[in-house]
Length: 199
Image (cartoon, rainbow, N blue to C red; front, side, top):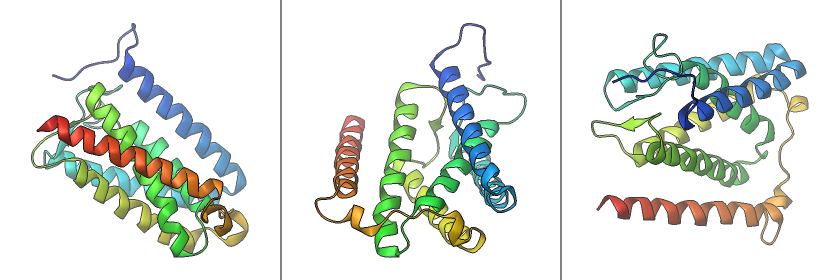
């Protein structure tokens, strides 16, 4: 049964409102830099993200039992329209120049998103996997989504609006290398732990 927002906020309400606020503030900060280019990228990523999600929900791959405005949509459309494009803009602006370094950058991003999605899946009623959908499906589609918009963003966002991480920060022994390996090791361990709990 769909759950409606109530006066006594619960964890689902706090999470969704927080995600909306972070996404909104982030989008505004980018639109102030160049509303046409970042706006186009944000609009495209929001449209593609919502269409994909609508298709997956329609096919009963997953559901969103708890939504702030269940009358509006079968999915948390406001949170997705604000937060996911903000992640796209953030990633396009800061992704390294060379693909050899973009991959570990996006690896950390996708693993971070999957960690958040996994915690939401386990501890809240925001999302629930259904027919033949699992973490691997989400993981694969997040990769496809972010890498597509990395390519598209490269066409839309000019170099002077980007601040790519320098490759030397990701080399062995540097802080970026430490962060990448820490995130990957922790998330892979937690993924294994989660899968082990399902057995």
